[in-house]
Amino acid sequence: MLVLDQLAYRHPGQPTGYAFSLEAAPGEITAVSGASGSGKSTLLDLIAGFLAPSSGSLTLDGRDLLPLQPEERPVSILFQADALFEHLSAASNVALGLPRGTDKAEKDAAVTSALAEVGLPEVGRQRGDTLSGGQKQRVALARTLLRKRPVLLLDEPFSALDDATRAAVRDLVLTLTKREGWITLLVSHHVDDIDAVATRQYRIAEGRLLLS
Image 1 (cartoon, rainbow, N blue to C red):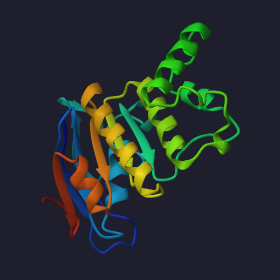
Image 2 (image 1 turned 90 degrees about the vertical axis):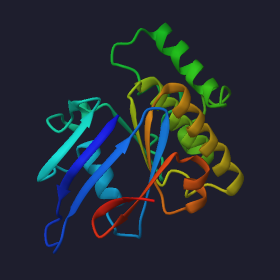
Image 3 (image 1 turned 135 degrees about the vertical axis):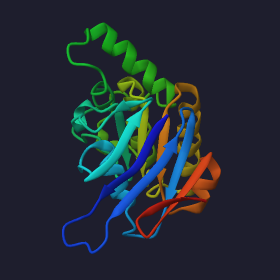
């Protein structure tokens, strides 16, 4: 269980700050909605370690995550704009999810399997800049599979996709979350996306998280 308890932060010059409390369970998608500027990205940055809270706690199965640097946290992030290196092949992008020093044969097998899992067994040799938006998001998910981190943060991951692709990628995220036992936190202002996949829903109002 991922638990935030009064995790507090105030941006410089901001008259009032945030105090986030939330629980998110494995195998479920927990959604957070809110108006633009309400603090959705701040919430994700606090969990990922890009921002340091002034007080409160952040734990995963009872383990304190706050002392950990961003690269040490058991967290993967998928943004609205994919984070692929466009000059690299899809396979090379996926392979970035593996530990350094992984044997080549093991790496090739893991990448092939991950691409097949997300329905893209044929795109391994294609450069990132030749892929469609939906393919890029699937490649990013394949990389997440190899990272084997229990927490997945999604920052408006479906917004740039057309309706058909959006539904397909959304369903894939839900399937992988259940199968892998991820604790998935979805930040979105799209009600349709939230209603389609979320087990638990919060909204941000006046710097607080409220159960919907």
